[in-house]
Length: 294
Image (tube, rainbow, N blue to C red; front, side, top):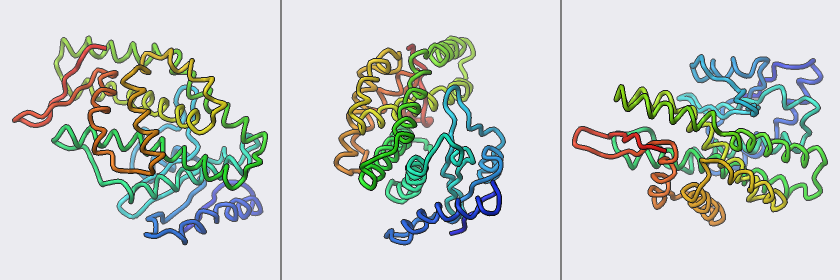
């Protein structure tokens, strides 16, 4: 496993490499071994992510949230990429450790979860989304759990960082008119043009951002009881309703059981995705997406 650090002075690079050795240490004790081949702290986070995953449109900043780490799965192996922002005064070593573990858990989950990709069958498509969101929920909960078990006397900066991150996740969900109105607009357009792919392409980012913000928010609330007070703000979102809460209860149960078999959760994902105007169905011609009103 290679560790590449492109930021800082020679001394700072060495200190960062030493800190990242914890990932190598953990990986050396895992059975089966992970497929992580490289850990990188690049000079330009977005450019490096795009380079590794062969894309041009990735941006780490979304509304009030900025990604500072990413797990990238390639045919060569898994890359863990960490932003140089992690090594500024905003973060301490405990918060960085939580990010390291979060990304490593994504890599481990790749081997624990079944290999799924978008398919001609609706069940496979729902399962894919079910696992993607559970992966985010699980990685957050497990990384919180490990750090708190290792360091029960946490730092003030770590506590403040967790609270700030949760607030940033919740903020766009409270004022969710941007996402809700965009989906409503695309539903109206679809009624005219009837192009399924156009509708899905134009609303994919809304589903991705909102659904992940929801599961990330609840991962904080479920791990830290003191954050339960923030749920009242989440419940103001038009995307948080009984369909959403049923899915989150399911994720909570699966996490507590350490159960990664999500085959019994398809109906919950069907209902959840209806919040975004989407319902898939198998037909003799293949999978079809119904665009429903929200």
